[in-house]
Each structure stands twice: as structure tokens, then as C-alpha cells.
Amino acid sequence: MSDSDNLYDVSVLIEDLRNDQTAVRVAAMRRLTEIASILGAERTRDELIPYLFELIDSDDEVLVVMAEQLGSFLPLVGGSEYTECVLDVLEKLCTMQEVTVREAATKSILKLCDVLTPEEINEYITAAAIRMHNGEWFTSRICVCSLLPILYKVKLATGDYDTVIEMYDELCKDSMPMIRKAAISVIPDFIKVMDKESCKVILVRDLYLLVRDDQDSVRICANGSCVALASVLSEQDRVTLILPLFLELASDNSWRVRFTTVTEIGVICDLFSKEIVETKLLPEFLHLLQDPEVEVRTAAASSLSTICKYLSVRAIVEKVLTLLTDLSNDPCEHVRIGLAGDFLKLCPILGTEATEKYLLPTYTHLLVDSNTKVRLNIVSDFELIKNVMSPEQLNGNLLPALIALKSDTEWRVRQTLLLYIPRLCHQLGREALYKELRRILLDYMTDEVAAIRESAVDVLVKVLTLYGEDFAEDTVLPTAEDLLHHEKYVLRVTGVHILAKAGVQMGEEMVDSRVIPLFQVVEDDSVANIRLNVAKAMKELKDKFSAEKKESFMMPLLMKYVKDPDRDVRYFAQVALDSVHS
Image (cartoon, rainbow, N blue to C red; front, side, top):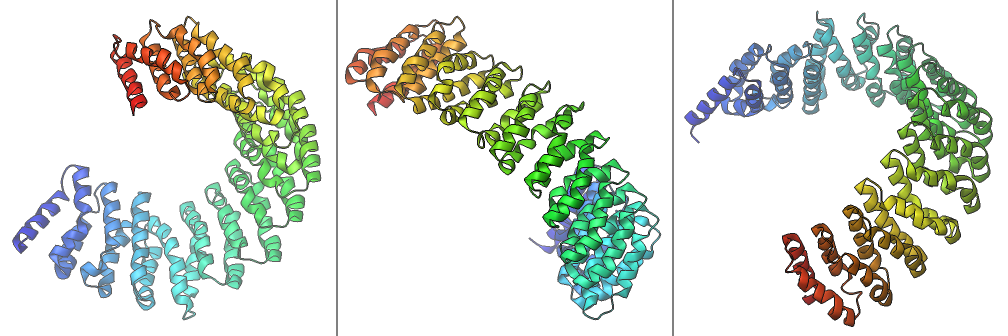
């Protein structure tokens, strides 16, 4: 392409940067580096950069892309000696009200630092940070917070980092809460570039100041910084310097701060010994379980098992489990939902005896909770309680309550319980459920929800593999027969599905003598969908029929179906025939 063609493309793109449609301007801005490479370094500095200043009033979407592109601009303006040329635009973008624009501009400044030498960072980025720190726009001071850790790292080599620390201290005391929030949020970045002693002297001082800030929007960011700082301090320093901060945050007068603290309880507990968790953190957690704010109680109830991993069984029983009754009867459904989704994780911690004594009453109580999500959470975690209780305990205490849920009004609860049946059969033994399985599974087979009927067929087949052909004779085939005679065609379809899937697990003799007669009940059904499924079943069972039955039953049936009035029946019959001959 000739130079004139390139310049024409550039003129079109530059014109697009002023287009009325935002999407066009964004697309043109994404090609900013392409424009600069065509113009060359000198024209980019003299013409394109000044032009970008004229576009500062563009839509935020355009400015975000501009900021992103400028992070790769150093080679296009002639190298690092022209860093200020690019920084000028990025500094301006750092004053914008829109957060996404400022964040993109800050990331691009940090991207420039990746290609600059320490001396160049010290020269250009430090000067830019000082200008932004002293500027009239508070928004630029927010951006400065993210630049200070890299400046500290660079100045560490020369020992001349007092300016950086002074700026950071001033930002921690800034009159604007957004700036103080940004200051506390970069503490983890400072930790990466500071030695332990500096962290202990400098950052702990500022952290204490910010944890006691009068704005909860600042304090809400404190937990992450406390965790990061504690992770690099000695165990003794954690207890003396950081633990008091966590305790303050856990009892903060803002529910949002307490909420954030309880959601981080696992990370916080990791930092301390079990003794400290039990004597210092647990009392605060117990208060959070009884917090007047629903959101805090919900978060605490959802974190019950998290803190209990760090406690002795005695502490759990004497201090935590005494609150289970109140939590399971909490007037707020969200608290009960959180509890139901978590407290059974205590089973492996407590063991069989304590689970039966302390958790089982709450479990059976929540099984009949009025809220669907509570019941669903309880049933979904059944595996946890099943694994620590003996078959006798399950059979006597839980099974009746669980079976009652097969009539639950929420289909997801019914399905979750249904899917547990094979595991129950395996753990409880043949006698516990055998007599009731036909009635239970028939209820599921006739469920109004198609997904449950389909799952019920799969469950039936899984139980068949456990119990063998006696179960097929006693339960599977009678269930299929009941359905095949049902007036609702969808249930007759379910009956055909049972024969197709269960027949694969049966021996040839049973298929010939018991399954084929049931197919004959519906082979001429008036509903095409049933004949279609019979044709599909022939394909699945072709290897289970004896040679005699293939000739006397299967082949004549398929030959009849290939002439069926319904084209779908004809199609699947032909597919079955082709599979026989392949």
C-alpha cells in the first residue's frame, strides 16, 4: 500500500474519532496505535497527541480505549525520552470522574513502568505522581495511590523513599473518603515491595488510622489489608498488632463492615493459632451469629463450618451448637437458607455420636421448613450426614422424614431426593427400602415434571443393578406395566423408557418372557410418539432378544413400523433395522 493510501486511511480514522456515533469513535480509537505507526514518531508527538487532548470530552467508552492504547505508545512517540508526551494525556485522563477511565489510565501508567528503567521511572513517573498529588482534582489523587508502591520499590535502591511515604501518609489523611479508601486498598501492593520491619513501622501505623476512619466505605476495605499485612508479620506481631484490628472490625458499628469481616473469617482464622481462634475470635463470631442485621446473621450462619474447623469439638458443642435452635427458627428465611447450606459440614468434624445428638434434630426440623431453598439445601447436603451415621440410625431417624419429601411442592427438592435413592439403597441395605421402592418410584414416574420422570427411570435402572432380577420381577416390570396401561400418553412413554433402559440390564430369558409381552401392549398405540419410542427401544434391545424372538417379534414389528403413517415412526424404525443389519 502506498504512503498516500496510508495517509488516506489515517484521515478517515481521525475523522471517525469525531463521528456522532459512539461505536464508530470507539472502533477508530482501538486503531490508535495503527494511526501512530503510520504517522511516525514526530507527527504523533506534534499532531496526534495534541489532537487527543481535544477528544478528552468524548464519551467514557472512548476515553477508556484511549487510555488502554496509550499504555503501548512509548515506541510510537520515539522512545522513553518522550515519556512525558504520553504521560501528559494519561494524567489528564486520571482526573476524569468516571472510574473505569481512571483505572484504565492508571494501568497504562503502570504499563509504561514495565518498559522504563528505574532511573526513568524516578524521573518521569515520580514527577507525574507529585503533580497529580498536588493537583486541584481529587480524582487524580485517587490514581496516585496505585503508583506509590512502584515508586517506593524504585527509590528503595537509593534510600530516597521519604517523599513516597510522606505522600502516602497525606493520602491516608486526605479529606476525601474515596482517596482514603484507595490508600487502604494499596497496602497489599506496598507489602510486596517493603521489608517486614518497614511494614511493621509504616503500614501498621497507617492501617490503625484507616481502620478507625469515620467512613465505613474506608473501613470496609480494611479486612483485606489486615490479612495481607498479618501474613508477613511474625506470629507474636500478628497477635499484638493485627488481632485487635480484626476484633474492632468484627464489632464495628456499621453492619457492612461486620458483614465483610464475617465473610473473611476463614482467612482470618488461618493467621492465628487454634487457641487464639477459640479464645479471641470465637466470642466475636458468636455475637455475629446473633447480630441484629439479617445480612450479618446470614453470612455468619453460612460460615459456621468455616470457623469450626479451627475449634475443638468441646468448644463447638458448648458454644456454637447451643445457637442452632435459634438459627433454625430465625424469622428471616435467608438466615435459615444460609444455615441449611452449611451446618451439615460439621458432621465429619463432630463424628457420629455428636452428629446424632446435636445436628440431627436441626436437620429434621429444617427438612420441613416452609422455605423451598431451605429444604433444597438440606436435601442436597444429605451425603454429609449419611457418611457419618450407621444404617440403623438412618433407617430409624431420617428415612421416614426423607421419604415424606417425595411429595414436596418444589420439584427440585423432589428431584434431589430422588437422585439419592440409589445411594440410600446401597448404604441401608436391601431390607430398608425394598418393600417401599415400587410405591416411591411409581410416584416419581407419574410426576408432572418431565425431568423428574426421566430421572426416575435412570434411578430405577441404577437400583436394578444393585438388587438384580428379583427387583426387576417385583418392582421394575410391574411399574412399567402400570404405566403402559395409563390413560395419559406421557406416562405410557415413561413405561416404554423403563423397558428400554431396564431391559439392557436383564437376561435374555426375562426379556423374551416378560419384556416383550409388555411391548405388545403398546405396539399399536394410537399415539405416534409411543410407537416411535417402541421403535427406538428395539434398537437398544436388539442384542438382548433371542434369535427366535428377533424373527417372530422384533423384525415383523419394525417392518410394520417402516410403513407407519407417521414419518417419525418410519424414520426410527428404519434406523433400528439398519442397526440390525450393520
